[in-house]
Length: 165
View 1 (cartoon, one colour):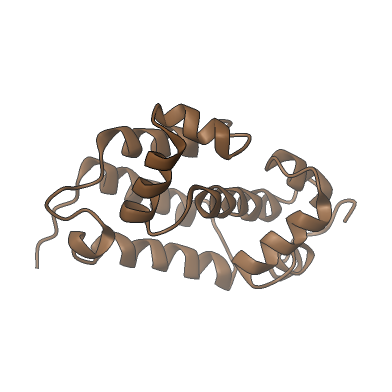
View 2 (spheres, one colour; view 1 turned 135 degrees about the horizontal axis):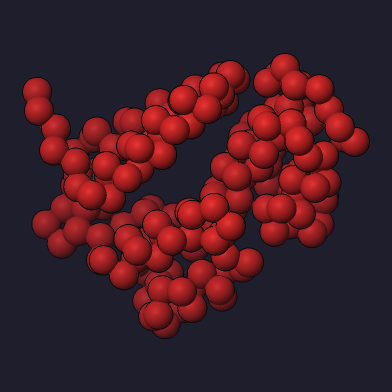
């Protein structure tokens, strides 16, 4: 079977390959990579890219927001980067990504948190701040809801020493 990937899907596959190459070691990391692969390989209609496809403005906004250091500070900043009304952005996210802008931003922040925790250079508090979450309690709740474990448990399972919690 031959699978043809769009430029967006090819970029996403490259990101996943980078995650694997970076030596991710936990079950959560493996689940993340495999889930990403499944999303890429299932029929495009199931991914919300049927005949109409994801609008280029949304594809570009998401791609830019995923670049290192570009994660939006909040949902209004994400909406502004899209150049559309908040209502239009919300409808488009739901239609094409099957989640709200808030859910997408939280997921991307937790993805960054997983990478930073796996590197082991920053404390959990520093990771939260780096992910744009100043409320540590909220960060812990979000992390656990997305990843299934607390940030500290995630770090312990990755086999890294802990610096400052």
